[in-house]
Amino acid sequence: MTVTRAYHHGDLPRALLQAAVTAIEESGPAAFSLRDLARRAGVSHAAPTHHFGDKAGLLTALAVEGFDLLTATLDAAGDDLLDVGVAYVDFAVRHRAHFEVMFRPDLYRADAPQVRAARERAGAALHTGVAALPADRPGPGDLRTDALAAWSIVHGFATLWLSGALPPDIEADPRTAARTVIRHLLPPPPDPTPTPQHSPVDQEVCVIPPDADDANLLIT
Image (cartoon, rainbow, N blue to C red; front, side, top):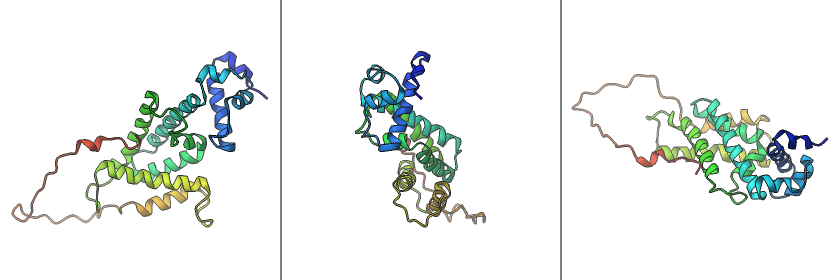
């Protein structure tokens, strides 16, 4: 069954993007052609070029959609870094085609304004979970370094899961497995025992001014 009628409802670009998702899930982002997508969508061979220009243009639109979907997924997870990390892995599993394109800037126009904006929104969403880490945890870093560490963990786990490279005895559900791994690497919760108070004579206070670079977004 084709979706030729999508042309008449003004949603042909949507149909072509969905066809691209299906093609990427089947054989990866490098294998398909615009002619193949036109065939899948049941439209003329010229239709994808009319809407996206070329394959890079179509994958640019797919990357933007992917970053926006990732932002929505992370926002819905709240501000707990563990939940945000699990949500990241969940996104990679549920939107594998987008995930495989988003972090392959050689496939699309990564400097396009709409890509940069969408990528920054996703980075800001990930920063929300990192910013909620307790300031008195052991070995705290600056926000950007902490965010990079968190991203490396969850992105690495997602990539290993999708490639089938994890040990065969790992938990079958990727979300449960990710939660176990991420929890293992997160700092323990703060000790609820009150900290003894010292007199001003016994303690020194060091005020560190905020670093303007801490506002840098992770996914840039």
